[in-house]
Image 1: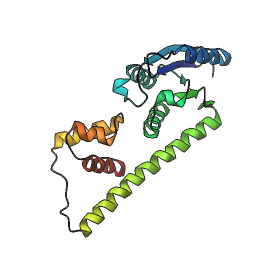
Image 2: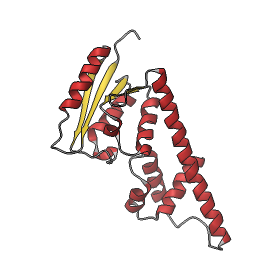
Image 3: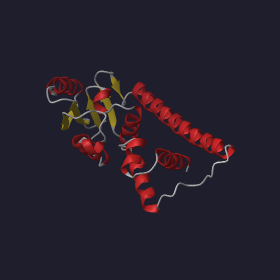
Image 4: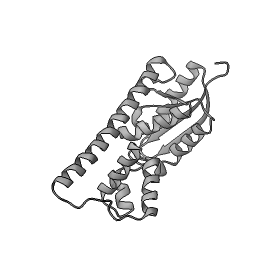
Length: 201
């Protein structure tokens, strides 16, 4: 690579009492050691890793910058700074991978610009596929069981606009099934069905 790697540092602390200083110091030292150019710094202070992108403005801003091709790598202190759920992490990795952006995690010594790091990326993709196939299988098994029990099947009465909004929320990936169901006043099974249909299509 002719030019220096453009790196964005992401810092997050879950309570206001914690400090991002230690994270920043270590990551800046690593960047200096590797000869990376730190072109941006994003910090969400006092925000839980369980929160979605809409409640982590700096995280969201960083991902938009990655998609626009403004950075080559994201560096974070640890995997739990990025998020708390495997699903959320996989979605994040998929998004930056699609943008051609690498990831460096200090605590896990993970650098996806290396062959070992790339293998880790692929392994997480396998887990994502596995999770999707389990959901689809569960939905099909549930329908089969309902038919056996003589239940009236068919789509729950849900208008097109609500279904479109649920699909958009699922595609965004910030919230889980329970949150989306509560937001649009539908049952979790309806959201699961839409999710399974999206995976199968």
